[in-house]
Length: 71
Image 1 (cartoon, helix red, strand yellow):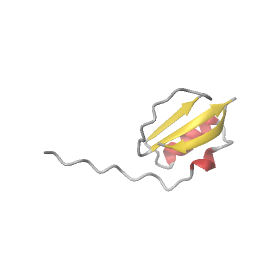
Image 2 (cartoon, one colour):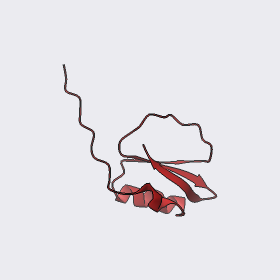
Image 3 (cartoon, helix red, strand yellow):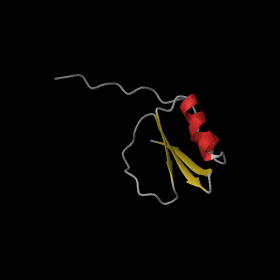
Image 4 (cartoon, one colour):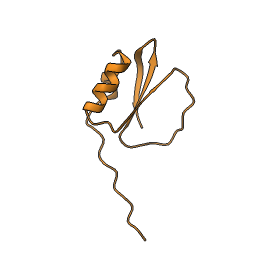
């Protein structure tokens, strides 16, 4: 049986630091800080609930990040 791959570590970065930033700036900054996946979502978007290491979710309202969370 093949070994189960070890997921890479998440950046040591708090999602709260993105709240209030312009969406484009937040996405750019998150990628610079090492997030492998960054997804911008409109408020109330229907999303899958699986946890993905290295993914940062940004809820964007009126062009600014209103909420941010890992996974």
